[in-house]
Each structure stands twice: as structure tokens, then as C-alpha cells.
Figure 1 (spheres, rainbow, N blue to C red):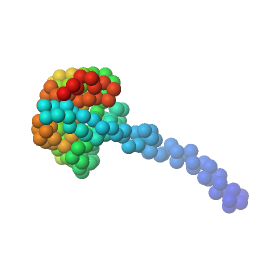
Figure 2 (tube, rainbow, N blue to C red):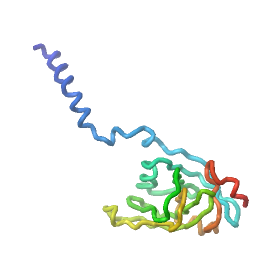
Figure 3 (cartoon, one colour):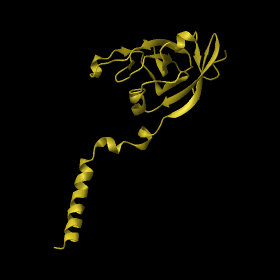
Figure 4 (tube, rainbow, N blue to C red):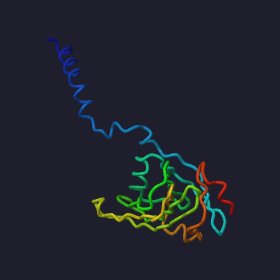
Length: 173
């Protein structure tokens, strides 16, 4: 058999095997790998509106990834976690593989902040060792920002977040 023909046949047989051996992570959809949607957001408190540039996590994969692995977050930036259905107050957030301390505001469908928590990084390599931060009340969205952001601006439970497509009229302050 000619060398070129043998090489062609070997490659033809090997290609399907390589495809089967390819890591599943390489098959992730491009939407999961693409940068998140960004948008401006306003938090309305007693001291007026505070504007943020947020990344929006809408899918389960985006929400699970969150701000993991980031070493910093610009001062007026954050991540907005959106849910299609209301979440139980027992469903919370953790800081596994998250490197920076964060504040989180849990927000109901009307755009009202129903709970605020400050979350510290979890240095454990085991996710089960990481604390879960729950709001203890139902929520439809959550906003993560640098720790201290809400206190520094006087933003409290009861203040309003103009959520994309929801609750914007409720933020009348």
C-alpha cells in the first residue's frame, strides 16, 4: 500500500475516535462562552439614583459562573442575576472560587430590594465548605457589587432597582 494512502486511511479511522475523546467542555455553546450582555442599571435610594454598568446573567450556566475567578470589579460595575420564575428565600448564593468580597441585593418582581447581604470569599477548594447567603424571602433577581457599595451610598432594604423590562415604573424616587 502506498504511504500517502496508508496515512489517509489511518487519519480517516482516527478522526471519529478523536471526536469521541474530545472534552465535553469544548462542546459548550458559544452563548455560554461569549461575554455576558451589559447594560446600565439604576438603584434608587434616599440619596438619589446610583448608576451601575452591569453584566446580566440570565441562563443557569451564566448564573452558576457569576463572578468566579475575577480578581477585581470596577467601582460602579456589578452583575445582575435574572430569573424567569420567583426564587425561594432559601435559595442563596455562595462564594466558591470567588476572590473578591461582594454585597448582594435580592430584588423582588416589583424591583424592591428585599434583602442585602455582604459575602466574603470562600478559600476552600471544596464547594460544600462554602457558606450560602440566603435572603429568607422570595426574590426574582439579585445584584452583586463590591462589598460596601450599598452602605457607602445609603442603599437599604425597601429601595428600588429599575430592572430591565420589569418594575421600572415602581422606581419613582
